[in-house]
Length: 198
Image (cartoon, rainbow, N blue to C red; front, side, top):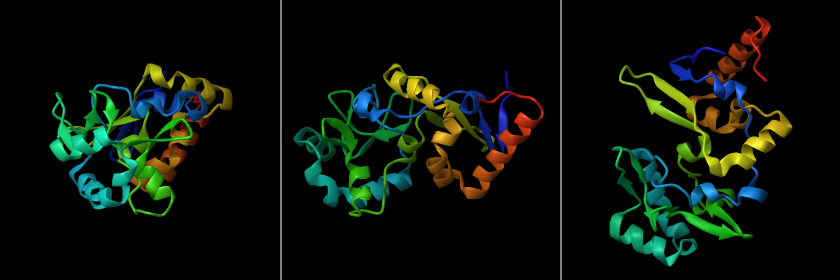
């Protein structure tokens, strides 16, 4: 078993290197947008970015989501004290839209079509990695296991796609290209001394 890995000021649980994961939208239909008991973790900066996109995506949202945003805003503090996106019916993210029978993120759809400059909260992009800020300022990254992602685990195993490689783009977005290059060097060094990663 690998120990906790440190890259820069970031601690990674070893299963981020050893577990395989690759989203399989054809099977899961984007269920992570409409399951759970809280919205996606979001920062104050991201709330500002999302508010700047609202006019552009408003018509893509359901009437229930529009009503929830009018009533509560785009985010709230959950029972664990975290700031998260608002949800409808106790589970559906307000930014869920539907395209070709799949649950999609209205924010991401607008971004991919060049209508906005903000994609979606980094917590969504990084999933199944969950980020936690420690009291000493260090960031801890953990692999989150969720039953709705069983198809992603199966596809990841089939493709032999480790979590850290599948999430290269959002990890670079969050921590930078230099940090990711250091992660690659760390993995290579672990493999060289005989630690099995894949």
